[in-house]
Length: 161
Image 1 (cartoon, rainbow, N blue to C red):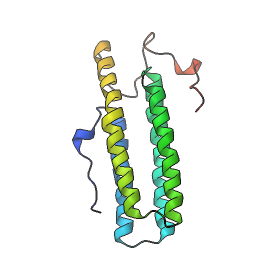
Image 2: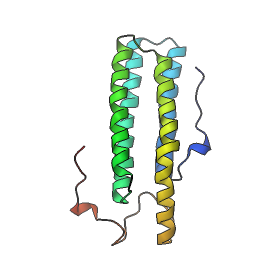
Image 3: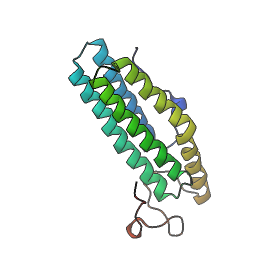
Image 4: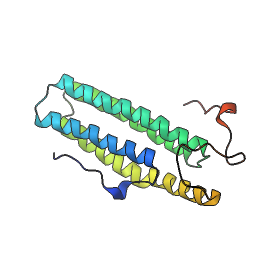
């Protein structure tokens, strides 16, 4: 499999999230290089673990942003994220037991990333752009919400996963 490139058409319009999506591609490319370089399975498993841990980090960042901005698709995104983490955990075990190979892991990961980004994350990007236009301020995913725009973080707790 050839190294992957992130296309600008996959950006959702939130710099923080778009950068994290590009990092997914970088990690997937490490997996592709490991196959090309005939790296041992133990190293490949570590790369898949890196991808899994990065996915966990990214999903928490994305979910926090959604929660903070009262995104109506928040619960659906959590469900999709949990499904992917479970699948990736299974794929890592399959790789370690030689049921899956580098190529199948890289293809699955990239295809999931692209389909999820295009089908789900772009909806969130559009939501944030509409919300931003309504508030007439530049869009920045890390802005503190204005009173009345969302619930302050200090007084709320996210639902249990």
